[in-house]
Amino acid sequence: MPFIITDPCIETKDTACVDVCPVDCIHPRKDEAEFAQATMLYIHPEECIDCGACVPACPVAAIYESIDATPANQQDLVEANGVYRNGDAETMAKAEEIVRAHIAAQPALMAVPAPERQAAHATH
Image (tube, rainbow, N blue to C red; front, side, top):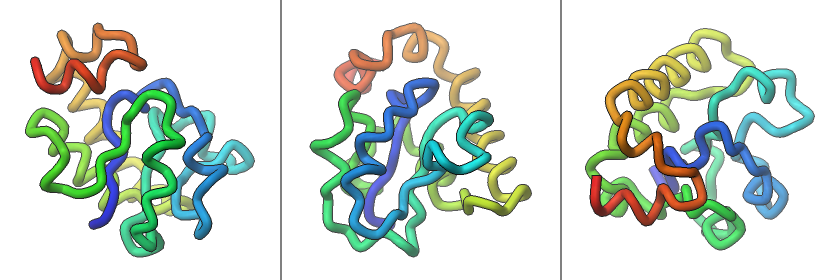
């Protein structure tokens, strides 16, 4: 799996990464019905071409370039990105369930404002 979106994206859902993605692998987009209900954005691992354009575009530094680079306290979101498939209600629900569990398990980290949360990954 090339890139992982992590918890600074939760409730932020800034779509700057979507705008720069050359293969449209980040979902849900603002024009997709699922956008309003999604807690965060997800990178489809089979559609991503590993170009990295999304990383500098993300204003809250929520995107990591690999599973290994993703902090330990964010590893559950690797699975959320891996299972999410836009338009598939079952996989979308599974991904959102993982995100809700992550939020519940990380109350101190989730209390940090999203723009500062990436820096807090090292301390939580």
